[in-house]
Length: 89
Image (cartoon, rainbow, N blue to C red; front, side):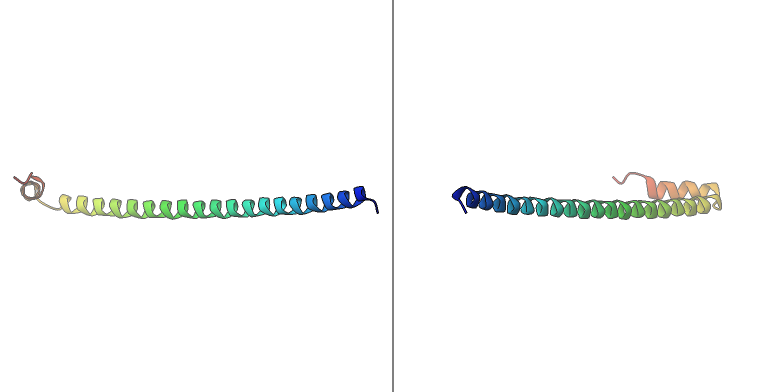
């Protein structure tokens, strides 16, 4: 074996090892990005569900208030508004 062949083999081996590390790094990056995307999607779904639940609760509360007010005589509604919605001084 000549010196050029030995150096060529060593160079080829170093290039193969460097390529393997690069390929492993790119696979790891892809996995990490995929996991981050999945987590973001799950967070968006959870936030959307929380907003929907709050909206349902607010709508139900508003409906209950509207029903209570419709069953009260006008002067009772006026008194409740004056007592609860006037500015405290």
